[in-house]
Image (tube, rainbow, N blue to C red; front, side, top):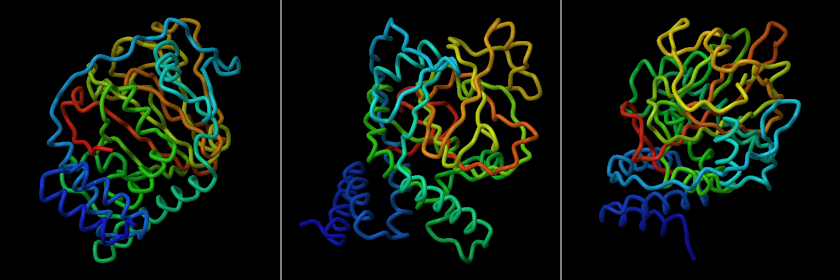
Length: 326
């Protein structure tokens, strides 16, 4: 019978032998039995080290389904339930419409757990270095600008070992790790710089963009954006262009990476933006070519919790940035 102690011993033996993936698996199982700040912090370091050792081996992807999935007529976007989620639907939805809405992907308990992890991480960050625990423990390596960019409405997931543990437990429970592996063609890595825990308090602003404008056009990506509170009407949500773009569009509206409304109109004549209404536990999946922005209007006065989880194929990873194997 596995115990916390036996799994820690097994993890140490695997790490000594250079078997980092096996060590990660043993530590993840140990932490399920008995949560430990030291184990959660060690897991982050091992996931980064395992990514650094990942050999590039670009694999062929599955064919793009010729048939486009049906769309929700109110949105112009395809939508499914957790039970209907599979890699072929994800591939078809992104290839033909740019994204896929997944209703009720997380259970109420998972939503509560992740929201509590975000609150604890933000509180630990505010408390100062002397009181920081696994809820907030900055990972060495991220560019200070990446950390600062997310700080106004959240924090990098890699800086909260406990939140990262709970997020990956959610992925394992739902099979998101397996789905992402099938979609990307290899075991995915979670972005150090782009995976973000969000607690957004209005007012806020948005800017149309494709993440490929700063991540690169030739990468393989899958973003699992999870709403942890109701949003899109009373709280900021997401605006999404409901069509597929096959290249990086001309940028430079306000920054060197964002898109002007004029460019979007020229590239998408007659296509209106979609503003999905999300319940807590809903999600949307898209890649680095999807055109989207934070959805905000003055009547939105409620706060929004969400997690932005960028997954990449290690062999087609952004040139700038680090990863954590999942």
